Each structure stands twice: as structure tokens, then as C-alpha cells.
Image 1 (cartoon, one colour):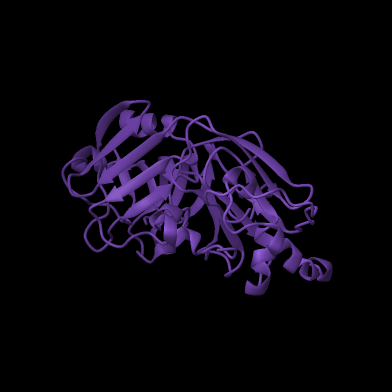
Image 2 (image 1 turned 45 degrees about the vertical axis):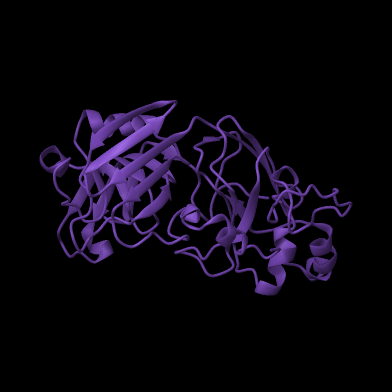
Length: 315
């Protein structure tokens, strides 16, 4: 951040209310070693760039202060992309933002959408503290919502929220329930074996690939597996995927035998899920042990609304 921007921090912080409607406010199983096919949102720290401040129910007057440039800012959603209802707007920076400067930076991030939401600073698993700030609605985005994001002067992105798609994985029953467009179906799964439990809590699909090379040595499991797995849907930065696993042909619906990922039977079940899912769709795991960290992928939904708002520098 430039000396000029720091000098304006006080004016900017006053110019943007700590409670604003989003329409003004935005104001494992393995680590992926290689992947092809599929597609998804740009990862943290890469891709196009961003916009924010926490929001409540008040509608403040627009500030006459023009936005400053935010060099080194990046946003996780591409211009024109359609995402699932759980996708946060995640802005990352090339360098950590000091605590004293975060309110000023946050005031230059803006989201225009018909929703209530707030920015919050997140300690990303793979970044330093102060390098990531996310915008999360109070509840999942409403399908069909059009969103405009601005990150300082000159950085604008537009995206659309698609249909609602929420998958709930119950590791106790060994089934996944898929709910979308008013319909529901159950699919047998196998999850992490005892001692290698799948993360509990709400995760958001970051991307997907038709095949991913997985190496157990990258997650401390020695030489237990090494090779390609197919129809891989990426859930956490630590390497949790929902993917095709031959073991699910035998153990799906019966027993948890994986190294932490969620396995689907080869052929129909795995491919069908892969074809349906888009970045931003929600995968909730219930009945497991430790809850996934907020910064391990897009774990923002594991905080209550009050907890989330408290992570904003403008709260």
C-alpha cells in the first residue's frame, strides 16, 4: 500500500459504514500434484482481481471519495462465471496487509448484489496472515443473483449465482444426499477410515478435474497410494476431494476405508456427480470429527454470522 493510501485511511474508514447492505458494501486424501480437464474458479492468489466492508441492515449514503488503486489484489471468481450458492468472494494480495491498514483496504472492496453480507479476514492455509479477505453472504446466495465486485479503482468483476446444489455426506450411514432444484437423491459413499477421518463441516467446491494425480507421500501416508484418480471434485487446500475410488465399488454404503477423501463408485455415480457440480457448490460432512478450518479452502460457512462479522476490520 502506498504512503498516499495510508494517509487516506482515516477518511476512507469514516466514509464507509461498518454496517451496510451488500448492494453497497462489498465493499485428505492427497495434495493435487497434477490435474487435467474439468475447470473451476481461479485459486487463491491467482486469477483476476477484487471488491467490500461488513454489512447489516442500514443503507449508508454513497461516499464521494474515489476508490484508490489496490495493486497486487486478486479475486477467485472469473468475470462472467456462474458459481454455486456457497461461493465466497475471496480476495488475496501479493503481500500481507498489516492490521492497521486492513480497514482502509476493506473499505475499497465493494460488492453490488441483492443480499446481506460481510467481509472477513481469513488466515489462508497457504498464505501469510493478512493476505486474504473474503465476502460471505449471511446465508447462501439466492440462485440467479447477479453480483458485481470492485477492488479499488479499475478492477471490476461480474458473476452470476446458478441453481442451488447442496451435497450432505453422512459418514455414519455411508451415504451422500444431493439436493437441487427441489429434488433429492441418495448416493452410497465411503469416507475416511478411523484415524484418517474426513473433515467435518461445510466445504465449498473450489474446482474440479477429470483426473488428478494423488501421492500419499505428500500428506504423510508413506507409499500407500500413488496414481491417478478420476472425476475429482476439490474441497480443501489440504487435499480433500470427492472422487472416483474403486474401493467404493465394494465399501460404498457400508464402511469408511479411504485416507480422508470421499469416494464414489467408478462409472455412473462418480461421473454423474462430476458432471453436475460447479465451483461454489456446497458439500457438508456430518457425523465426522474435527471441523475443517475456515482458511482450509472455503470454510467460511463454519462460522456463525456473528462470528463471521467479527472478523471484519470494520466491525
